[in-house]
Amino acid sequence: MAPEDAVRDALGSHDDATVERELHAVPPHAVYEVTFGGRRAVCKVARGPTADPAKEAAVLRYVGSETPVSVPRVLASGDDYVVTEWCDDVPEDPTLTEARVRAMGRGLATLHRSAASDFRASGRVRAGPEGMTQTRDEGWSETLRRVLEDRASYLDTVGYGDVAREILSVVRENGERLDAVRETTLLHGNYLPDHVGVAEGSVTRVIDFEHALVGPGEWDYLRTVVPVFGIDPTPTDGVSPAAFRDAYESVRPFPDGFDRRRPLYHLVNAASYLRALHVQRSRLDAHAGGVEPANPLGVEAVARRAYDLCASVRDALDDRRDG
Image (cartoon, rainbow, N blue to C red):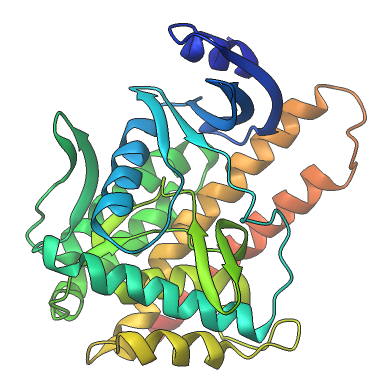
């Protein structure tokens, strides 16, 4: 079924719902602007087995009702779709400034601080009959192992499953170090500038909770820092990565041992990023469809990024063995 047909099918049981245009179609979801009940809205539908719009709907409802963080209101949801209100306050391509970065740091820490009392064990988020639920893993290392097992099953199909399994072995070997962090809270999982609205020094909206987990806030922090500032954080657009960390810790300091766990997080995240790059490559290959794509370097560029990332992870694992 084509993505637009999947959206129409999801909206079929709702009166006064029409599809307007595609916003994103990166597996495992397709996202469309729709008119729903006479208002502008967004519909996200599942386009692959790893998609879980029902989970995201449950997380949005929890955050909207139980924390001070503003999120899109859920208008409708089902097992394979979620419809949310349109948010004009989240820019598609935001300019990175120190004021924005500091607001994002405080906003992420506020989410973590306000949700912490509701979560006593790390785990993966689920949608249940009564709303958001979670697995209650024995420790943070178990949660990361489950994440890696999921990544490995996909990477097996593209020839990099051995990399994910080697990272998994490193996590097993360092279980005590990872489990030493006792704090748990709700994690956004993909808290990037284009998912966060900022105005007058404060976060006005946070969207896209599809990668939500329950675990220590330091994981979420790095899931922002690495894409924005790099593994060895350096200034981006003249903005220092210290601005984000200082702002975060002004609200919620990191627990002891964070810098010792940081290299392990980089390895785990590498498996996630490698999968994401291959998903992008698959989409670009399909989009080209045997004809010249709009960006003829797109497929090659994504493939090169995936190769370079894999090489850097292998080097890091080799260095660890040699050390």
